[in-house]
Length: 455
Ligand code: PHE
Ligand code: NA
View 1: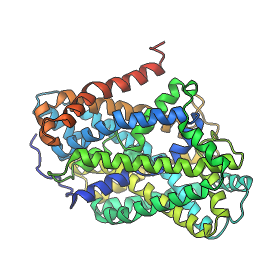
View 2 (view 1 turned 90 degrees about the horizontal axis):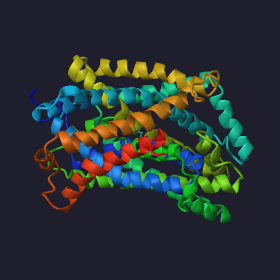
View 3 (view 1 turned 135 degrees about the vertical axis):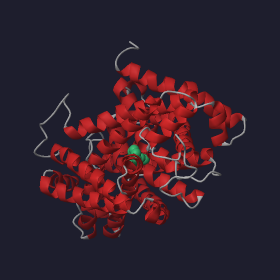
């Protein structure tokens, strides 16, 4: 198959445009909503260390692999993998790896949009002062009222999907760069403000530092190790082709190594700041760290309801959170849309509406998971729980494992080294060693440990 020298969907104008878009993809609900609550559920410190180790030895090498495959393939993940495999006279079964990623995109966005919808619902609530002087019980019941009402949840989910689809129909390069350039620093600033507020809780702040960074390895179960690893994939948008598809729009001369490190560092900082902002509130108010997916919606309003200017800052915070979720959502549909356009000959507009419609429908499962469908469970999990587990803990790590094998073993070393353009020095050699041996082994060990193969 002949490969285009440029993507038919256009290119990023500069290296920064790519960094901003990929950071926009990485930083999202995963950092601010998910990281704190799964850290709470999995006992803190030791979980955080496993997560950080996974970012370093699995996440960064894999991000480089995805960007390099995308940039060399210059098409949607399915075609890029297929044509790069053909180059090396290898089987085209690798396109199924791309297909699994596309399916993961459908699943993830279906619940992601429902959570983003909740953040959207919190913008007017905060701006209009609903949380003024709120108590922990009050914050909990305001959130419960929102999620127990399927109609309201559905309305916000619909609005969020519409905003996402609207941008993707026009091509992702437009608008994304400008909004992320403004949103990211603003989000950082507001998180720092929240951490500053949290630091005033004195004792609770110290407890949070211990909770987050003092590891108690006896709290780690096989499942929490898998959750930590799965979250490293989820938070960096790896294992499903999102970063690969963005890489396919990347101009030739950019250093893949530098951009991957930059994106990972920014993403990790946002998550740690979110943890430092939220746990002091949890401890200061005698709340339960492991209460689950409603954690941020029950804690942050307390801070905004009591700090000076909280109405304003809180409203801006939820607005920025929705922005961050939106720039991630775009990257979740982009592989699907690129594939529909390239392989099915559907126009971008139609492709986006089609994908968006299916995702919206699938989102109903999550909408109902919090109310009328609370008791529709399988393996003790609601539909939302299952979708989350299946994607973050299974599909993304499995996709990542195969991508590592592809970049390390299927592609010739001469191709990957040409694309990374790092010469043959220490950085390239370390990358090759990690992607060939360490990254795949680590993923396999975590899976094997879970199903009890390691005793
Ligand atoms: N990385 C995003 C977040 O942390 C979620 C995401 C996962 C986006 C997979 C794209 C692909 O919120
Ligand atoms: Na993230």
